[in-house]
Amino acid sequence: MIVALNNKSNLTKEEFLSYQEELGKITCASTMILCASPLNIANYNLTNCHWGSQNVSKDLVGAHTGEIAASQLKSYGVEYCIVGHSERRQDQKETNEEIAQKIQNLYAEGIKPILCCGETKEERESGKLIEVIEQEIISATENLTSEEKDELIVAYEPIWSIGTGLIPTIEEIEEVFKLINNLLPNTKVLYGGSANDKNIDELKQCSLIEGYLLGGLSLKPENLKVFIEKLEN
Ligand code: PGA
Image 1 (tube, rainbow, N blue to C red):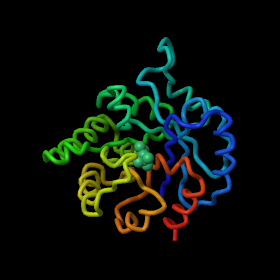
Image 2: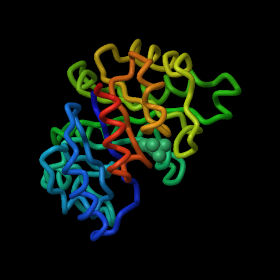
Image 3: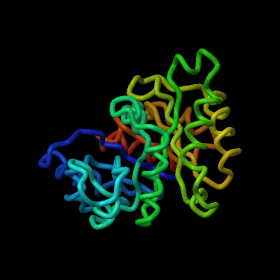
């Protein structure tokens, strides 16, 4: 199992340092990946977590003010990077083409991408679910080698579920996971969207889920510990 933690734009330096101390106490058989906000990457100091980033530049190192290049992430020991999170697709108007470029840049540095995909409530209700997921996956992966496709991690995150406390039914999750598994047969697929220590028993019923991308829960080490215990037992 993979447990990826997406801190988003949370935790000042001081808060992050004490958070990291709490996180360091968690024992976990799963692969835990910490994706802190960019400045906190410089303060990574854990042995029970792999180090991740929430984003990477679509450009290479050079004259791109405010951007962080894949090679710079690499130099800080980053091994994984989230790409195409719905908040970036919506707020920064990130396109499928840019996301495909980011994945190429990450692979060029040996960093594993965690590609997010997911539909809005409106897209689901208007019957566009399959079209949206297929387009997000295919456009991001069509230029990858089969080895790169196998190395990729995909996170299915229904946008209407992120931070809302709502989760899809197991049948709804399975429908999308089967679609992704058909497109990318050897790729690990995670679920993300309001997963927590209360609903993990229900989510666990879906045998296709190979791990979780956690936003809100990532900021609560006590609850995260309970989540991991329930996940692994
Ligand atoms: P959430 O966020 O767990 O707070 O819903 C998940 C995510 O946005 O990756």
